[in-house]
Image (cartoon, rainbow, N blue to C red; front, side):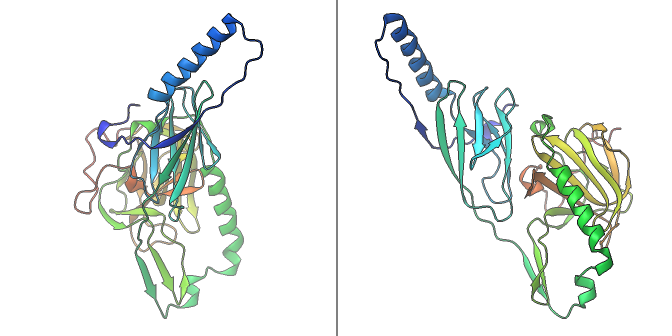
Length: 311
């Protein structure tokens, strides 16, 4: 996937070169060494640059490009890279602002890129006088909640070589944005869990489509908190989760293409009204779908394309 020119951004870096001492050199050895050095210099001056597409801020999912055959690490964590040098990396709600990306070229040259994220401000609401029974789930439900949460974490940790994330994303439903990523409520002085998705207000039964190609890795009709829940693996740790669904139209192991119908909007689980809660992850990092989806139009998602919603 070629990264759009308008979103490309090269990152300043420091290069680390290692030299060799040659004992008893011969002309053939010197010739080979010189050719290797010249090749490495050419690569460092052109193909070793790191290009990232997306907003460099907390909560962002970025798509990167390096020279084919290179290896990439984010803060010493190995990142899966395609044969063409493409990869994804995500940063959570409270990610450290200073990040370190290390790239090793096919010939072994290493470059270190220092990436500075922009800090985000989130909507925090403080609510007092809320009955405790509405804030804390019943004790008898605790085991179920933990079991379901563990299953979701396991699925989101999927590390496949799928590349659906490279083709771009569309909005999975059409409607007004009624909830944003990172917002949080504080009940009776006790912070609740931040909201890690974007809510799209839509009528019950409205169609939900796949925002990008992938494979269904979880399809559960009735989880305690999220009700009807669906997860699609887009590859390289990138996944989409859809919550509070009224009905599921796909099953685990099924491949889907961007625009395929996958579910219908509902209000299942702990929900106050029909809407789609769309969440995205890069492995365990919860990222903001808005950073990868097409721009909103005055607080609404763009109209679904005529080709969207095909089955």
